[in-house]
Image 1 (cartoon, rainbow over the protein chains, first blue to last red):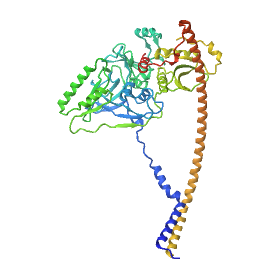
Image 2 (spheres, rainbow over the protein chains, first blue to last red):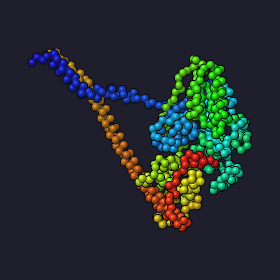
Image 3 (cartoon, rainbow over the protein chains, first blue to last red):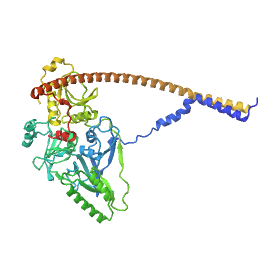
Image 4 (spheres, rainbow over the protein chains, first blue to last red):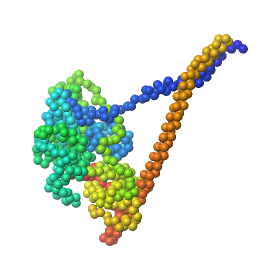
Amino acid sequence: MKLSPISNWLLLTALWAFVLSLNGCAGISWALNGAQENPYPPPSHDEREIERNEFTLPSGDDVVGGLAVVRLEKGDTLPDVARHFGLGVTAISAANPGVDLWVPEVGKLVMLPLSFILPDAPRSGIVINIAAMRLFRYQGNGNPLAVLTFPVGIGTTERPTPTGKMSVERKEMWPTWHVPSSILKAHRAKGDPLPAVVLPGPQNPLGESALYLSKSGYLIHGTNKPASIGLKATNGCMRLYPEDVKRLYDDTPLHTPVVIVNQPYLIGQRDGVLYMEAHKPAEGADEREQKRIFERLREIERETGQPLNWKEIEQVTVEARGIPVPISRLAPESSNEAPTTTEVRHPEKLYGKPEVPELKLDGWYVLAANVADETEARRIAAMINHQGPPIPSRVLVDRDRYRVMTGPFKDVDEAGDAIRRLKIDLELNGILVVPASEPLQELVQQPTPGV
Amino acid sequence: MKRAILGIFMTLLAGTVMGCATSGDLAKMQEQQNQTAAKADQALQEARSAMATADAAKRQADAANAAATRAETTANNAATATTNSATGGPVEETPANQTPQSSDVFQKSMGK
């Protein structure tokens, strides 16, 4: 039988298809292997690549660092993210308005404000800007200058951190806290008497090291309350994270000058671009500080002949997010591009995040709250977990209610201490929960520790 | 026709030569299948272990909840008894229902 040419080709094609099917693995394996060898690259940088503390400053520049973002995961709190990335609580909160401090939305990208305009002060020794709650330690005289920077906790409105010039008079590792009489009195009044002397240890609020300043009674020290860094919570001293104060302690010789300023509005330049950074000013200082900075900006506008973006300036001032924002090019040839923001990968574990031990049947507990809203329960548990020293706390679901259970504690005394701390520090009325393994009669016989 | 037969013959010859590579790939596939099976076994074991852990955690949580319920009942009864004897009326709110005003209270708790 004579086949037409088309039929011949069809036959050949069918045979090829048959042969290829035998070689399916070999036929497509190259394609598969090719894909495996060239996987889709990850979109973000390793978090270790982001510099948080140590920068170099070329001559003429006033801005260090760079902005970054990280995607939140389940169980994250902003204070934990802040600590991991060398930020204070207020700084990360101001940079992310509307994000819940304790129960932020999972998957949300949060800004890490790791760029700073240096305060208007001599660049030597230590400079602390109270408004930004940030400490800058200048090192060396060279070009570029080296700058070490850390977030700080500062004094309350009632007991503010003073501004002015001073120096490091002495240093001490594992300092003993000699409690000032005013603090003794305040603690007695709230039913929480303190001893006159607190020895080094987890109860000592000075932490592991302290730099005593020439202004009597004022220190730069560590803390047993890391979640207070970036808050106005001290009696005038400046607190640093334990890991930061150690570094500062080792790096700072005696008689190092210390200048403390209060500059909520900062302007500075980098690569020919003028930036402005705004922080929430102290009460009553807003108008004065704004006037001062606006005058300076008008001066710059006149000097450079380059118009400033006054709309942007007003927005930066009002929003006060603590992030350097470009407001003008200082010269026509300066870059017009907005600074880039790096996305960092979420670390496997956030440094310093409080650990909550597993439940134990024979543990004592304190029921701190029983609420209908899960988010509220998680918020309360997070606040308790971040006390100093930490009080382990978790949320238990019971039908349509959410219990905040603190513990386990090893005995009734430890549980009683937790009840006392919850009452005094967080205004929570805790209920003692005897071990689940205890028979019911024991519940009646156990006295509730006094509050 | 002769050409067609020649074409078919060449095709089959090519298939046979490539078949050596096919055997190698088959062996590779078999190894991959064995590895996949081993991984599946491991995953199954891990899943079982995780379930066991989750079951244990749930039992602990249930026990803790039960203990908390007992404690709340006792506390409420005690509070009711105290208030009734003082005022002659029942207690409106259980002690553990109160929640702190978040940021101010937390900031205060961070003081020395």
